[in-house]
Length: 477
Image 1 (cartoon, one colour):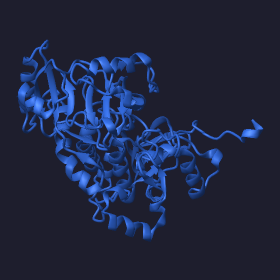
Image 2: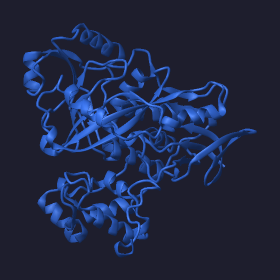
Image 3: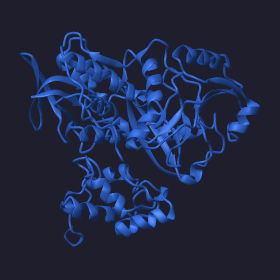
Image 4: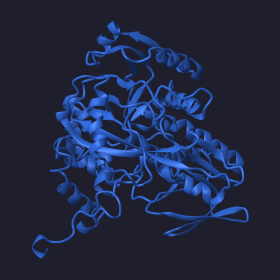
C-alpha cells in the first residue's frame, strides 16, 4: 500500500511529488498519458507572473507571489531555463488609466515588490514597438519567463530520483473509500493508498466528485497561441500584457526563454475537456487584438500554433487542501493562471498538509539537485570539442533548425523518466521545435528511438497512444 498517490503528472502534480519526496514516504504519481507534461502544463504562456493581478486575500494572490519568489532558486537547483525579463501592463489613450492605479495598489496589497507606473516617454525607451496609442503602463520587474516543459520535467525527474514512482499510461476509472484507506481502480489494476492528492487538471472535478459531497465544476477555458520564429524574438523584451478582463489577462506578446516570440492566448469556455484544437476564428483574432498593445508583430514568421486548456473552477480561486468530508483526500484543483507561477508554493503547501496528516518524517537522503541535458551551444569551443571527443554523438547534428545533437537526444531517452515519443524528445531537447517543425529531423529521431528503447518503428508515436506515425510499408498500402 502506498502512503500517497498523486493523480496527474503536470507541473502541479510533479511539484507536489518533489516536495513529498523530502519526507520518508512511499508515493506514486498516476498519469494517464505516456509522459509527464502532456496536459495544460505543456500549452500555456510560460510566464512567471509577478502577482499583481490576483484578487487580494485569495489563494491565487498568496501562492503566486510565493511561487515567484521561489522560482529562481528552483531553476538553479533543478537546472531549467528562467529569465527575469519583467512585465508591462499597457493602457491605451482610449482606456481607463485608473485601472492601472488599481493594479498598482493591488500589487502592494499582494506583496509584489517594485511595481510602478511608467509614462510613455520611458516606455518607448523600454519597448520601442509598443502600439502608438499606448500612453502608460504598470511595470513589474519580478515578472519572468520560463520553459514550462523543462520546469515540469525537472520537478518530476527529481521526485523520481528521490524515490517517487511514476505510473504512466494509467487512467483512474473510479475511487473507493475502504475502511481507513482508498482503493483507486485504474485501467491497469487497483492501487491502494492511505492518501490521495488530486492534481488531475481539467478532470480534477471528476475525481473530487467521486469521494466528496462538495461538488466541484471545472470549466475548460481554451487559450490559442501563435509561436513566431526566433528571427522575431527581439520584437519585445518584456512580457506585454493588456488591461485584464473577467476572462483573464488578455492577449500577451512575450519573448520566450528559447528566443522565439509568443502571442496569445484567446479565452473561450468550452464543454470538451479534450478540446485542444485551434480554430480559424481564434487564431485570426490574435493579430488585431495584439496590435492594440504591440505594433508590427511579424506574423509572416509564425512557425506553429497551438491551444491549451485552463482548469477554471466556477468559484474562481484555486481549490487546495483536504476535502471536508473525504479524509486524506487532498485537492489541488482549479489551477488556472497563475498556476505555473504558483506551482512551487502549491507543492510546498500540499506536501506539508499531507505530511502532517500522515505523520511523515523528513527524508535525510533527499537530494534537491538535478542536472539537465547538456546544451553544447552554451559551451565554449574548447568545452564543446572536449565533449565531442569524449562522446562523438554530440558532434552529430540531428535537428538543424535548433542545432540539436544525437548526444542530447540519447540523454533525453536514457535519463530518469526518459522520453519514449517524438514529443517527449522534443520537449526535453527542442528537436523538432524549430522553423521546419520536425519536417526533416523526425525520421532520424524515430530511428534513434527504435534503436535505443528498443522498439518497433510501428510503435513509435508522436505523443499519446493513438498517434502512431508508421502504419505500414509503402508498397503494401
